[in-house]
Image (cartoon, rainbow, N blue to C red; front, side, top):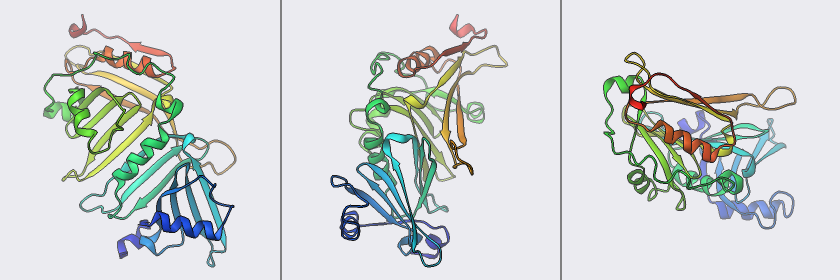
Length: 312
């Protein structure tokens, strides 16, 4: 526990088994289900606070003590089946706290800051395994319909103009998959369908999700891993490259990730409604992107064609 953790209300990890035993002793049959287990447990204010955060085998459970005495306690449950997207952000050189965000239907965005000792990649692996299940894992879609597309053998280096324009280039999906699986960023059964890179950042379309890896800061130590489940994508548009003034192709994904809860009864406000991805001219198979989108999304395909010598 340090002054930074207290000021920033950064949660510290505590022993999950020991904490579960205390919870069951205090609430024998009220809080946890008989077959439910606490996998990760955290305590606010660097371990000295009153609030607790639990990742169980079934849900995210938050214990919020209110008021001066703490007698009034709120319990918030976020079932994994309601999660539409989630992100984990590692700590940086100057920004030493890490962060977890969970976007849940009907609830909004639940955000928890952790201190530098918390292994957020372990949390990422756990959330991937419990959230991407059933329909969220794309079991209702043709998982390997994009096989043979997008192996990407072009130059992955990024020029200054592409970097300024955030233009992504297609890279080898097999090489990227072999690098990400040992670290646990991808699940063992997960397959990379298409992969793109711009500078230090990557956008990956897998058999289970869309994964955006955003490397931040000068040192690149702070990294955000954003997962968007395929069923959350409600539509998309694909635009081919144009003439010399507009040489990049473009993909726009449409979705509604819930944000903060409304002050009145009703659905949470929408925070992220779209993701725009520009592709470097000649360095991405935009039609392969369209095919992957069609395989994993129940949505209307909108394709905006412009003049392009590359695709003629």
